[in-house]
Picture 1: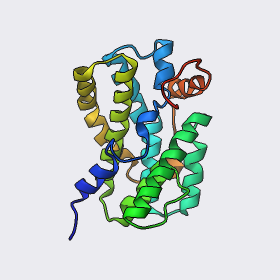
Picture 2: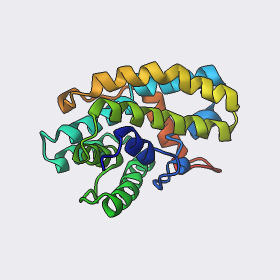
Picture 3: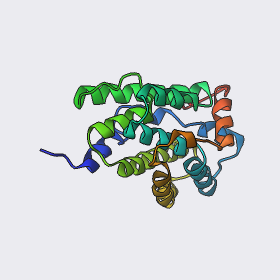
Picture 4: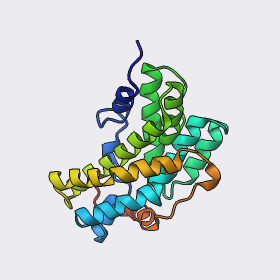
Length: 212
């Protein structure tokens, strides 16, 4: 029986899928302490920059490159690791990739072990015959939804405002997915420097809720 691709992706990218996404803030916790993210508007701007200029875009390009598999997957994965701007951000993508691979390999079959999260997701989606653009859109929405959830725990936004932010960023998820779909790694770039600085600062915070 063929399972609807939406259901497979919903399962993989659900907060219930055991990759531990809820333990990471992607530097958002340090941005909150620095006063850079203080409300729904600043959170929306922060996440919008990640989608169009930063790690949201570059990670989507790694998903697409792994899906197309025109380069050796090890080469794609090495570049994904190189784009992590700090030790904690590298931990974030490696640990989630390992957790994702462990479950997908056990339940769906395959050999994804050792890959970073976006690369593992791209390979798994290709293997299951899942449409790339749908995969990218749902990956990006899951990415921002997790960070909005982190913002709720940090305090800048409540439940209603959090859902408004996710809704408002949905068109950017679609636009970024379209930009990234080619998977051309000669065009990979990241320019969300304040987010990268936040990820570095997080490593030295005295008290932390999140792992990144």
